[in-house]
Length: 126
Image 1 (spheres, rainbow, N blue to C red):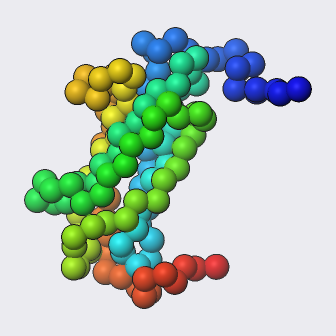
Image 2 (image 1 turned 135 degrees about the horizontal axis):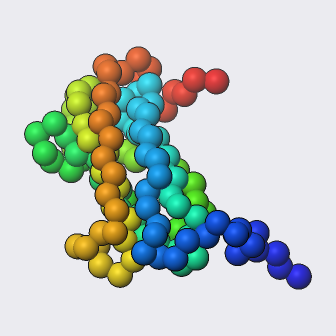
Image 3 (image 1 turned 90 degrees about the horizontal axis):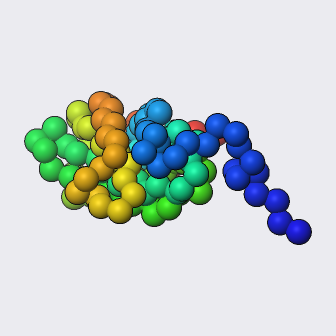
């Protein structure tokens, strides 16, 4: 017997009402990875997400996609690529869409400041 609690949520919205409710981004101490958390409206149909980290000069430095997410709250660790000194200002952009990425249903941007690295890559607090 399988129990699917997500289908029993009375607050689930139809696809045209699904939005990004919150977006947070936190750099790891090594400055090369970013933890991204996204909360979306409870949904009946599973949406897709496109996540991009954009440098101060407008270049994408990390990206991932999540197809038909299963939960209302998801998190990702993105690795910054092609940057020798990652300290600086970035934008984390998330697009929520169903069929067509070029016509997102919702978009959320959040500013991200990465300070100079405080620990060697691979070391984590705790």
